Structure formats: structure tokens, C-alpha cells
Image 1 (cartoon, rainbow, N blue to C red):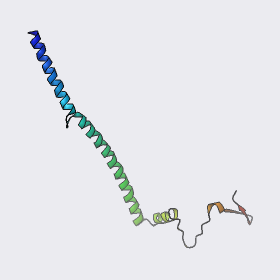
Image 2 (cartoon, rainbow, N blue to C red):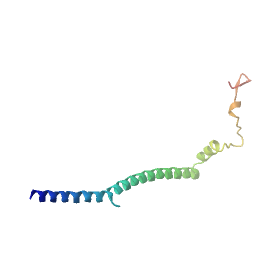
Image 3 (tube, rainbow, N blue to C red):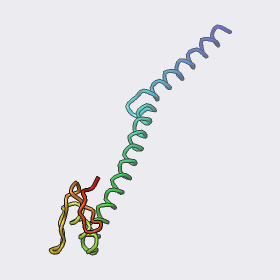
Length: 106
């Protein structure tokens, strides 16, 4: 009698073990679920980055449409444009004026 009961428990444990293996490793199993959750988290992070980038670009577009000071700043800093009456001196040729004498920058 004990032998049959032991064999019954072994077969139940084998069925449970095979069921757990099947649940874990089939096409829609736990491993697939974990991988999909990781992919979901990665995509959510990527979406957040893209939304921030979109907000930054929209802000720049708004600045270009509405803010003349911003346009002037970009023209001066990025494209080195100047007004008609301005002169630009190269940095290595800056002079100091002291007592009406021109001295080169040390």
C-alpha cells in the first residue's frame, strides 16, 4: 500500500514539475513575460527621452517665432553675424589702450 501511495505522489510531483517547466519555458511563459517587461521598461524610458527632446525642439521653434533677442543671440553666437556698425577683432589680436599707447595682450 505504501508503495502505491509513494508512486502516486511521485507521479503527481512529476506532473507538477512538468507543468511548471511548461509554464516557464513555453512561448507565452514566464521567461517571455520577463523579457517583455524589460522591453516595455526600455521603451518607456526611450519615450520619455523623446518627449523631452520634442519639448526642447518645440521651445526652440517658439523662441525662433516670437523672441527677437533669441534670434539675435543665435545669429551672433552660432553664425558670427554682426550689426552694420560693429567690428570684430580676432581674439589673439586684442589690444589694451593705456595712456594713449597700444600694448599687445600678454
